Length: 218
Image (cartoon, rainbow, N blue to C red):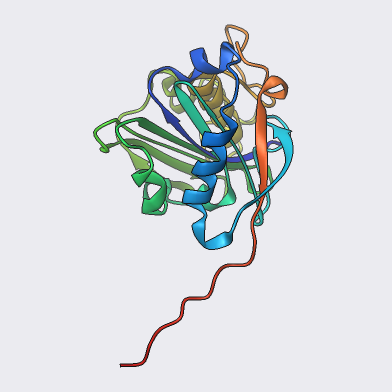
């Protein structure tokens, strides 16, 4: 598997339903959001991308979209070993909405997911990798996680793997159940994903050099 992503989502309800409806992006709101979140990097509008191709941008890029009911921002700044500890400015943007963070990196067989309720309380945080195994595991397992933890979808036929599942396969299951799309799929998919990530347009931005902070000597 070669999939990678790093994104945060703010949602008023079911993200799957919003993305499946293929709503029009609010470009003005999208630009304003990116400028708030990355005020220290002077974002400049760039070419559009898609959720399939640009969900894992480099350190100087951001892809985002604001729609009625949901917002997605793709940035490497939310790819944390401990997803529950992402920068507070990202959580402050929630303003009473549910927040989802999802990141995965195929090179190290790692993925992380976290979710906060509209009240700002952490509901679930999970980070697992082939090298560090379970890095963070907070909250109850989501229903679709259970078959993975029970070993129903082992990473290898001979059981020679340090976890009872492959992290990227559980990662894809999170994408399917929470966001309604997959990048490469996973064992046990019982229904097709309602969202084609190639059809989800994101506005692109380039980030400038971080602004210096000047301190006056007292």
